[in-house]
View 1 (cartoon, rainbow, N blue to C red):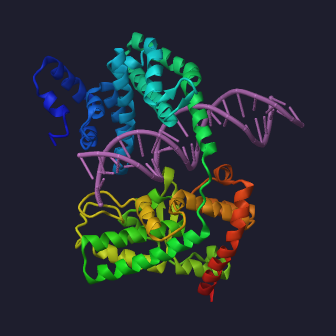
View 2 (view 1 turned 60 degrees about the horizontal axis):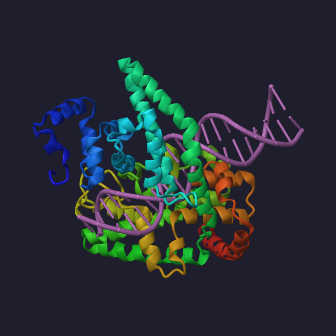
View 3 (view 1 turned 120 degrees about the vertical axis):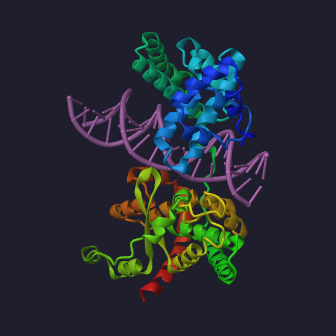
Length: 432
DNA sequence: GCCGTACCCAGACTTGGCTG
DNA sequence: CAGCCAAGTCTGGGTACGGC
């Protein structure tokens, strides 16, 4: 701990400055925040984060908002590092704290620093990292907000005026000086990026490969429970669940053990089943449904095939033997620590192994686009499209905006329609 | 003036690379 | 090879704008 955490020793160093800092800091920065900062790699940026009151206050507000969810810690740390990196540059220009940075008089210096940190090229008017510039802007505003609130509470008129001035500077000048160009760079980059839709053939290859890998791992785990065989089966099953559901990788990986064990096994409600075709009813009986909280807390369903359920049951029963901690709440838990296997990692791993022509296209977002394009090819009616979008966890509007794809793609996809019909034939056997 | 839409923004979340 | 870092993407909400 002491190796990484440079702040604590400083607090006890007995210097006058450090002592004042301690009293101020400990008043408003909670233990939880320090815990959040603790695992950060020890480098210049981290030192800045730990010693700048403004950044710490931002950390505190973010922690108050998200602290209950450990999967968000990473996100908070990233925000803090972004700000600290600008501050490092500002320090070469005689601005030493974030609080100073949001003083109206320093506005132009801040703009300069942000441009520098995100690699602005004066000549071509482009950014190397446009989204960084945008994100720092958001955070600076947040900082100004925090200070403004403090000014309101302490009835500090001068400070109030100062933060207000910064905010109006920001609203009218930031767009002109930073964000407009940054957005331009971003959309330019996107425009020039070739479309990477997976080939249906590759999808099938991956599917087959996963089924095999899962089976091998399943047998191995059944024979001898070890963290290795556990990991293999967990990763394979995770990847299966993701491609089967065309689900965002993160959503599935964060599934809780509780979600799985308490899944809804009750038979379909009569009224609901009335509206379904015989085929659809068969599907509902065949698959297990687990409901999880998806992006932005909306409820999404994950469907599991009987094979997957079997694998998962085996995994759950062997958690203890394979060194998974009691406190780990995730279904796809990593042994010996409190995190979970990341879906995109296992997907990438298996995509490489399965012998696909373009393994780099087999990513969860690409697969989602794949569905979107195919549904267009199949001429789904609007209400059916709604359901597809709903299942994928999108608003229909976004679905249209983001996933309507150019003509050439549709041509290409029509060829894959044939393969999809094959897929359908496969589903037909369940019906029979 | 009303409505649809095009664009902008903030912020949560994902992805892929890298490193210790 | 797990975990961190840096950059990008997605998405809901807002507002500006132009046709009617």
